[in-house]
Image 1: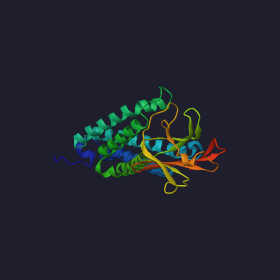
Image 2: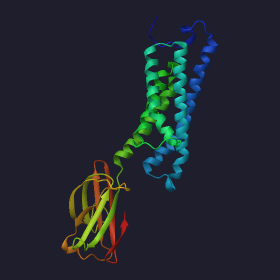
Image 3: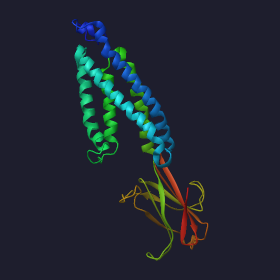
Image 4: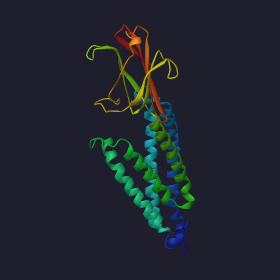
Length: 285
């Protein structure tokens, strides 16, 4: 007998009525395409919010798209389970594909079970961030593609395409995301300095400090170097780096602008401080 996938499950199990044999496969097809439609409804707005970094006040705008994505993940999980049961029940060949799908589904369950338990408040939150979710859902999608029969694989492949697009958007955003904050600008009596500028960033990178700059392409360069991220408790920004201001710009006057520009590969961010009342400042973009 050919090792190719048998599209007619009744051919593998002659004792099963052909009409009955198609029922579970029809459920797989329906579940996969419903998952795709729900995923598109939630995934595309979520990708747009991730790219524009705009999820509404306190991220509330992302709740509904995230709920759609969650329902779609449940749908692709159901599709995977139904497809595997369909293959096992009808002994669909090649059997190695069924074993691979079952292994992927089991690994996905191991990744997602603790995360779901943490989400429901049964256990404490994990410390790995979103990696278990990404790995678990990716394995579910892989299981759905492996287990689906050839005639019903289009839905699983469509879901996989949208999921890969979402992963690419999340990866690019994480790769290019960076923020800078100004910790201090002005005289420092502790260090007996007439003028200092201190800033922190959310990742390491090369920095340029400019005086009188409204952007990272104008003003006077007063310091350059490498900023090394050092974690601070309770903050996403690293420990501040202190730059001594040149003597010819101190004492600072109201309206003076000092800007930090930090770059790491494709990631770049800037933040400026505008001096107010000589010893205080306002942060500026």
